[in-house]
Length: 104
Image 1 (cartoon, rainbow, N blue to C red):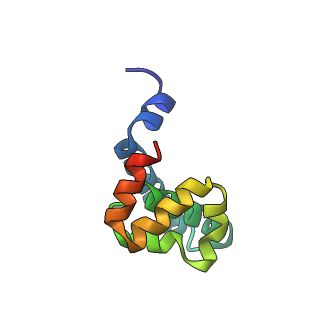
Image 2: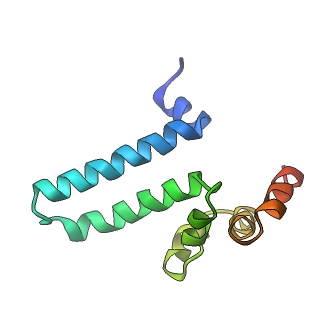
């Protein structure tokens, strides 16, 4: 059972669902307010979307999204080890799986 926080930390599927729900909420709020708060929501929505991509690295497209130039600030928040893993996941998935196993 445990707390909500511990459940989110322990299960990436729960976090992925949570990020999807947050993105839906942002879209609904934006639609409800007729894009009045788009400027304020945009950075938060982007951060949430990138967090969602970082949880679903089985899709190489998500890794490539994280590696785009405009998303460098998001990746800089993570360790070098994680950044190498994302780069490998985008361009050499089999090597990334091997790297993941040996880097633990």
